[in-house]
Length: 361
Image (cartoon, rainbow, N blue to C red; front, side):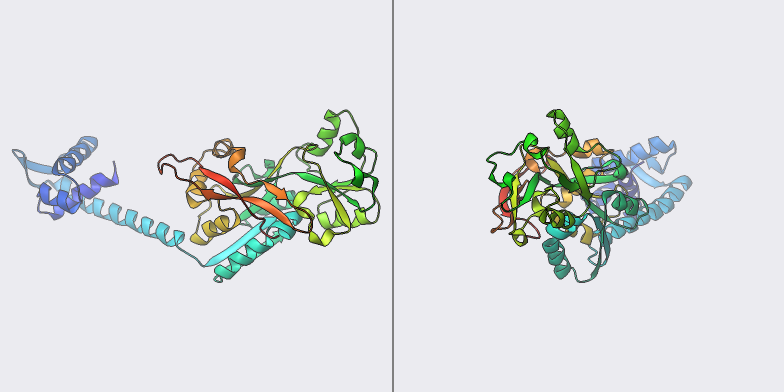
Protein backbone atom coordinates (compact mmCIF):
# COMPACT_ATOMS: atom_id res chain seq x y z
CA UNK A 1 0.00 0.00 0.00
CA UNK A 2 1.33 3.42 -0.98
CA UNK A 3 0.46 6.92 0.15
CA UNK A 4 -0.23 7.87 -3.46
CA UNK A 5 -2.96 5.22 -3.61
CA UNK A 6 -4.59 6.68 -0.49
CA UNK A 7 -4.31 10.20 -1.92
CA UNK A 8 -6.05 9.02 -5.08
CA UNK A 9 -8.80 7.39 -3.02
CA UNK A 10 -9.42 10.60 -1.04
CA UNK A 11 -9.32 12.76 -4.18
CA UNK A 12 -11.94 10.59 -5.92
CA UNK A 13 -14.19 10.66 -2.86
CA UNK A 14 -13.84 14.46 -2.60
CA UNK A 15 -14.62 14.87 -6.32
CA UNK A 16 -18.02 13.15 -6.08
CA UNK A 17 -16.49 10.03 -7.68
CA UNK A 18 -15.41 12.02 -10.75
CA UNK A 19 -12.07 10.40 -11.62
CA UNK A 20 -11.16 13.04 -14.20
CA UNK A 21 -11.67 15.84 -11.67
CA UNK A 22 -9.65 13.90 -9.07
CA UNK A 23 -6.80 13.45 -11.56
CA UNK A 24 -6.80 17.19 -12.31
CA UNK A 25 -6.58 18.02 -8.59
CA UNK A 26 -3.66 15.58 -8.23
CA UNK A 27 -1.93 16.91 -11.37
CA UNK A 28 -1.91 13.48 -12.98
CA UNK A 29 -3.92 11.55 -15.58
CA UNK A 30 -7.29 9.86 -15.26
CA UNK A 31 -5.86 6.40 -16.18
CA UNK A 32 -3.16 6.80 -13.51
CA UNK A 33 -5.78 7.46 -10.82
CA UNK A 34 -7.95 4.55 -11.99
CA UNK A 35 -4.93 2.25 -11.90
CA UNK A 36 -4.03 3.25 -8.32
CA UNK A 37 -7.60 2.63 -7.15
CA UNK A 38 -7.63 -0.75 -8.86
CA UNK A 39 -4.29 -1.75 -7.34
CA UNK A 40 -5.51 -0.71 -3.89
CA UNK A 41 -8.66 -2.82 -4.20
CA UNK A 42 -6.62 -5.81 -5.39
CA UNK A 43 -4.18 -5.51 -2.50
CA UNK A 44 -6.93 -5.18 0.13
CA UNK A 45 -9.17 -7.79 -1.47
CA UNK A 46 -12.29 -5.63 -1.11
CA UNK A 47 -14.49 -3.47 -3.34
CA UNK A 48 -14.09 0.17 -2.37
CA UNK A 49 -16.48 1.46 -5.02
CA UNK A 50 -19.72 0.09 -6.45
CA UNK A 51 -19.62 0.45 -10.24
CA UNK A 52 -22.13 0.97 -13.02
CA UNK A 53 -20.34 -0.16 -16.13
CA UNK A 54 -17.04 1.72 -16.17
CA UNK A 55 -18.36 4.50 -13.94
CA UNK A 56 -18.00 4.69 -10.16
CA UNK A 57 -21.51 4.68 -8.74
CA UNK A 58 -20.94 4.93 -4.97
CA UNK A 59 -18.67 4.08 -2.08
CA UNK A 60 -19.27 0.69 -0.51
CA UNK A 61 -19.57 0.48 3.28
CA UNK A 62 -16.03 -0.87 3.43
CA UNK A 63 -14.95 1.88 1.04
CA UNK A 64 -16.30 4.58 3.35
CA UNK A 65 -14.27 3.15 6.22
CA UNK A 66 -11.21 3.11 3.94
CA UNK A 67 -11.66 6.78 3.04
CA UNK A 68 -12.01 7.79 6.71
CA UNK A 69 -8.85 5.90 7.69
CA UNK A 70 -6.97 7.08 4.59
CA UNK A 71 -7.62 10.69 5.60
CA UNK A 72 -6.04 10.12 9.01
CA UNK A 73 -3.03 8.31 7.52
CA UNK A 74 -2.34 10.97 4.90
CA UNK A 75 -2.76 13.72 7.51
CA UNK A 76 -0.23 12.05 9.84
CA UNK A 77 2.17 11.56 6.92
CA UNK A 78 1.92 15.27 6.15
CA UNK A 79 2.56 16.14 9.79
CA UNK A 80 5.68 13.95 9.74
CA UNK A 81 6.81 15.71 6.58
CA UNK A 82 6.20 19.09 8.22
CA UNK A 83 8.32 18.03 11.21
CA UNK A 84 11.13 17.05 8.84
CA UNK A 85 10.96 20.41 7.05
CA UNK A 86 11.03 22.25 10.37
CA UNK A 87 14.06 20.30 11.59
CA UNK A 88 15.91 20.80 8.31
CA UNK A 89 15.32 24.55 8.48
CA UNK A 90 15.92 24.93 12.22
CA UNK A 91 18.83 27.30 12.87
CA UNK A 92 18.62 27.32 16.67
CA UNK A 93 19.74 24.67 19.12
CA UNK A 94 22.82 23.23 20.82
CA UNK A 95 25.84 21.75 19.09
CA UNK A 96 28.50 19.72 20.94
CA UNK A 97 31.79 18.78 19.27
CA UNK A 98 34.35 16.29 20.55
CA UNK A 99 37.86 16.50 19.11
CA UNK A 100 41.59 16.22 19.77
CA UNK A 101 44.02 18.94 20.78
CA UNK A 102 45.61 19.28 17.33
CA UNK A 103 42.26 19.82 15.62
CA UNK A 104 40.98 22.20 18.32
CA UNK A 105 44.20 24.23 18.42
CA UNK A 106 45.31 24.37 14.79
CA UNK A 107 42.41 23.50 12.46
CA UNK A 108 39.10 24.54 14.01
CA UNK A 109 39.46 28.10 15.41
CA UNK A 110 38.53 29.98 12.24
CA UNK A 111 35.84 27.44 11.31
CA UNK A 112 34.18 27.66 14.72
CA UNK A 113 34.52 31.43 14.80
CA UNK A 114 32.89 31.77 11.40
CA UNK A 115 30.13 29.36 12.33
CA UNK A 116 29.33 31.00 15.67
CA UNK A 117 29.16 34.46 14.09
CA UNK A 118 26.65 33.27 11.50
CA UNK A 119 24.68 31.06 13.93
CA UNK A 120 24.28 33.17 17.04
CA UNK A 121 21.19 31.17 18.08
CA UNK A 122 23.23 27.94 18.35
CA UNK A 123 24.85 27.15 21.69
CA UNK A 124 28.29 25.74 20.84
CA UNK A 125 30.25 23.35 23.06
CA UNK A 126 33.79 22.13 22.35
CA UNK A 127 35.15 19.10 24.21
CA UNK A 128 38.87 18.34 23.78
CA UNK A 129 40.41 14.97 24.64
CA UNK A 130 41.93 11.80 23.22
CA UNK A 131 40.21 9.77 20.52
CA UNK A 132 39.19 7.25 23.17
CA UNK A 133 37.70 9.99 25.36
CA UNK A 134 35.85 11.39 22.37
CA UNK A 135 34.51 7.91 21.57
CA UNK A 136 33.21 7.56 25.12
CA UNK A 137 31.38 10.89 24.76
CA UNK A 138 29.92 9.60 21.50
CA UNK A 139 28.70 6.38 23.14
CA UNK A 140 26.99 8.36 25.91
CA UNK A 141 25.40 10.81 23.42
CA UNK A 142 27.23 13.79 24.90
CA UNK A 143 28.39 15.09 21.51
CA UNK A 144 26.79 15.62 18.11
CA UNK A 145 29.99 15.44 16.06
CA UNK A 146 33.45 13.95 16.53
CA UNK A 147 36.48 15.23 14.64
CA UNK A 148 39.53 13.00 14.85
CA UNK A 149 42.16 11.13 12.88
CA UNK A 150 42.73 7.48 12.12
CA UNK A 151 41.29 5.06 14.63
CA UNK A 152 37.65 4.48 13.68
CA UNK A 153 37.15 1.30 15.72
CA UNK A 154 35.50 3.02 18.73
CA UNK A 155 33.08 4.78 16.34
CA UNK A 156 31.65 1.71 14.62
CA UNK A 157 28.10 2.96 15.26
CA UNK A 158 28.78 6.33 13.60
CA UNK A 159 29.06 7.67 10.05
CA UNK A 160 32.60 8.95 9.42
CA UNK A 161 33.15 11.40 6.55
CA UNK A 162 36.64 12.38 5.34
CA UNK A 163 37.58 15.95 6.29
CA UNK A 164 41.13 16.19 4.92
CA UNK A 165 44.36 14.24 4.39
CA UNK A 166 47.72 15.05 5.99
CA UNK A 167 51.21 13.76 6.77
CA UNK A 168 53.53 13.85 9.74
CA UNK A 169 56.56 16.09 9.86
CA UNK A 170 59.70 16.13 11.99
CA UNK A 171 60.62 19.10 14.18
CA UNK A 172 63.99 19.93 15.71
CA UNK A 173 65.54 23.04 17.27
CA UNK A 174 67.45 25.32 14.92
CA UNK A 175 71.04 24.17 14.71
CA UNK A 176 70.15 20.49 15.18
CA UNK A 177 72.09 18.07 12.99
CA UNK A 178 68.93 16.79 11.28
CA UNK A 179 68.07 20.31 10.14
CA UNK A 180 70.83 19.94 7.53
CA UNK A 181 69.45 16.73 6.03
CA UNK A 182 68.46 17.13 2.40
CA UNK A 183 66.15 14.09 2.48
CA UNK A 184 65.48 12.56 5.87
CA UNK A 185 65.51 8.77 6.33
CA UNK A 186 64.15 6.51 9.06
CA UNK A 187 67.71 5.48 9.80
CA UNK A 188 68.52 9.14 10.47
CA UNK A 189 65.59 9.40 12.89
CA UNK A 190 66.44 6.14 14.64
CA UNK A 191 69.66 7.74 15.91
CA UNK A 192 67.70 10.10 18.19
CA UNK A 193 65.07 9.80 20.92
CA UNK A 194 61.64 10.44 19.42
CA UNK A 195 58.82 12.50 20.93
CA UNK A 196 55.42 11.90 19.34
CA UNK A 197 51.71 11.43 19.89
CA UNK A 198 50.30 8.88 22.32
CA UNK A 199 49.60 5.57 20.63
CA UNK A 200 46.08 4.25 20.24
CA UNK A 201 45.10 1.44 22.58
CA UNK A 202 43.00 -0.36 19.95
CA UNK A 203 45.06 -0.20 16.73
CA UNK A 204 48.76 -0.83 16.01
CA UNK A 205 50.81 2.41 15.79
CA UNK A 206 51.59 3.18 12.15
CA UNK A 207 54.72 5.11 13.15
CA UNK A 208 56.37 2.06 14.70
CA UNK A 209 55.21 -0.09 11.78
CA UNK A 210 57.01 2.23 9.34
CA UNK A 211 60.28 1.77 11.23
CA UNK A 212 59.82 -1.99 11.48
CA UNK A 213 59.14 -2.28 7.76
CA UNK A 214 62.40 -0.43 7.11
CA UNK A 215 64.28 -2.76 9.42
CA UNK A 216 65.18 -0.19 12.06
CA UNK A 217 64.03 0.35 15.63
CA UNK A 218 62.52 3.61 16.84
CA UNK A 219 63.50 4.96 20.25
CA UNK A 220 60.24 6.58 21.38
CA UNK A 221 61.03 8.17 24.74
CA UNK A 222 57.99 10.41 25.23
CA UNK A 223 54.40 10.39 23.97
CA UNK A 224 51.70 13.00 24.55
CA UNK A 225 48.28 13.79 23.14
CA UNK A 226 49.11 17.49 22.89
CA UNK A 227 51.35 18.74 20.07
CA UNK A 228 52.30 21.80 22.12
CA UNK A 229 53.60 19.53 24.89
CA UNK A 230 55.73 17.65 22.37
CA UNK A 231 57.15 20.91 21.01
CA UNK A 232 57.96 22.08 24.54
CA UNK A 233 60.12 19.00 25.17
CA UNK A 234 61.76 19.27 21.75
CA UNK A 235 62.83 22.79 22.76
CA UNK A 236 64.26 21.36 25.98
CA UNK A 237 66.46 19.05 23.89
CA UNK A 238 64.87 15.78 24.98
CA UNK A 239 64.59 14.48 21.44
CA UNK A 240 63.22 14.87 17.92
CA UNK A 241 59.52 15.57 17.51
CA UNK A 242 57.21 13.76 15.09
CA UNK A 243 53.92 15.68 14.83
CA UNK A 244 51.16 16.57 12.39
CA UNK A 245 52.18 19.09 9.75
CA UNK A 246 49.43 21.52 10.75
CA UNK A 247 50.75 21.63 14.35
CA UNK A 248 53.74 23.75 13.27
CA UNK A 249 52.97 27.40 12.55
CA UNK A 250 54.41 30.89 12.64
CA UNK A 251 54.71 30.78 16.44
CA UNK A 252 57.36 28.06 16.09
CA UNK A 253 60.07 30.19 14.51
CA UNK A 254 62.67 28.59 16.81
CA UNK A 255 61.95 25.15 15.39
CA UNK A 256 62.75 23.66 11.99
CA UNK A 257 60.04 21.65 10.26
CA UNK A 258 61.38 18.78 8.13
CA UNK A 259 59.23 17.05 5.54
CA UNK A 260 58.45 13.42 6.38
CA UNK A 261 55.67 12.64 3.90
CA UNK A 262 57.93 10.07 2.24
CA UNK A 263 58.59 8.29 5.55
CA UNK A 264 55.18 7.78 7.11
CA UNK A 265 51.75 6.84 5.76
CA UNK A 266 49.07 9.36 4.95
CA UNK A 267 46.51 10.15 7.63
CA UNK A 268 42.88 11.18 7.26
CA UNK A 269 40.98 13.37 9.64
CA UNK A 270 37.25 12.72 9.64
CA UNK A 271 34.06 14.23 11.00
CA UNK A 272 31.62 11.72 12.43
CA UNK A 273 28.03 11.65 13.65
CA UNK A 274 25.53 9.03 14.78
CA UNK A 275 23.92 7.02 12.00
CA UNK A 276 20.54 7.75 13.64
CA UNK A 277 21.16 11.45 14.21
CA UNK A 278 18.40 13.93 13.40
CA UNK A 279 20.12 16.42 11.11
CA UNK A 280 18.87 19.92 11.86
CA UNK A 281 19.63 22.74 9.47
CA UNK A 282 22.31 24.14 11.78
CA UNK A 283 24.10 20.73 11.77
CA UNK A 284 24.26 20.64 7.99
CA UNK A 285 25.57 24.21 8.12
CA UNK A 286 28.35 23.23 10.52
CA UNK A 287 29.54 20.39 8.30
CA UNK A 288 29.47 22.66 5.25
CA UNK A 289 31.46 25.33 7.12
CA UNK A 290 33.94 22.71 8.27
CA UNK A 291 34.34 20.92 4.93
CA UNK A 292 32.61 22.46 1.89
CA UNK A 293 33.01 19.23 -0.10
CA UNK A 294 30.63 17.54 2.37
CA UNK A 295 27.44 19.01 0.98
CA UNK A 296 24.01 18.23 2.41
CA UNK A 297 23.45 15.83 -0.49
CA UNK A 298 26.68 13.95 0.28
CA UNK A 299 25.87 13.82 4.02
CA UNK A 300 22.38 12.46 3.37
CA UNK A 301 23.69 9.82 1.02
CA UNK A 302 26.35 8.75 3.53
CA UNK A 303 23.79 8.54 6.35
CA UNK A 304 21.64 6.24 4.22
CA UNK A 305 24.53 3.77 3.72
CA UNK A 306 24.27 0.48 5.57
CA UNK A 307 27.83 0.47 6.90
CA UNK A 308 31.09 2.43 6.94
CA UNK A 309 32.52 0.49 4.00
CA UNK A 310 29.68 1.83 1.83
CA UNK A 311 30.39 5.34 3.11
CA UNK A 312 34.10 5.01 2.29
CA UNK A 313 33.20 3.88 -1.22
CA UNK A 314 31.62 7.30 -1.87
CA UNK A 315 35.05 8.92 -1.75
CA UNK A 316 38.45 8.43 -3.32
CA UNK A 317 41.70 10.14 -2.38
CA UNK A 318 41.33 12.68 -5.18
CA UNK A 319 38.11 13.98 -3.65
CA UNK A 320 39.48 14.46 -0.14
CA UNK A 321 41.31 17.76 0.53
CA UNK A 322 45.04 17.48 1.14
CA UNK A 323 46.76 19.61 3.75
CA UNK A 324 49.72 21.36 2.17
CA UNK A 325 52.24 23.07 4.49
CA UNK A 326 53.77 26.31 3.31
CA UNK A 327 56.80 27.99 4.78
CA UNK A 328 56.46 28.77 8.46
CA UNK A 329 56.41 32.46 7.66
CA UNK A 330 53.40 31.95 5.39
CA UNK A 331 51.37 29.67 7.64
CA UNK A 332 49.52 26.54 6.57
CA UNK A 333 47.27 25.66 3.66
CA UNK A 334 44.72 23.01 2.96
CA UNK A 335 43.18 22.13 -0.38
CA UNK A 336 39.53 23.09 -0.73
CA UNK A 337 36.70 21.97 -3.00
CA UNK A 338 34.50 23.61 -5.53
CA UNK A 339 31.75 21.82 -7.47
CA UNK A 340 32.07 21.01 -11.17
CA UNK A 341 29.30 20.47 -13.67
CA UNK A 342 27.88 16.97 -13.35
CA UNK A 343 24.63 15.07 -13.69
CA UNK A 344 22.29 15.77 -10.80
CA UNK A 345 21.26 12.14 -10.91
CA UNK A 346 24.74 10.67 -10.80
CA UNK A 347 24.91 10.71 -6.99
CA UNK A 348 28.70 10.83 -7.17
CA UNK A 349 31.00 13.13 -5.22
CA UNK A 350 32.08 15.20 -8.23
CA UNK A 351 34.27 17.96 -6.89
CA UNK A 352 37.82 18.98 -7.61
CA UNK A 353 40.66 20.41 -5.57
CA UNK A 354 41.65 24.05 -5.61
CA UNK A 355 44.13 25.82 -3.41
CA UNK A 356 42.77 27.64 -0.36
CA UNK A 357 43.60 28.66 3.21
CA UNK A 358 43.64 26.15 6.03
CA UNK A 359 40.82 26.76 8.52
CA UNK A 360 42.44 28.12 11.64
CA UNK A 361 45.62 29.33 9.92
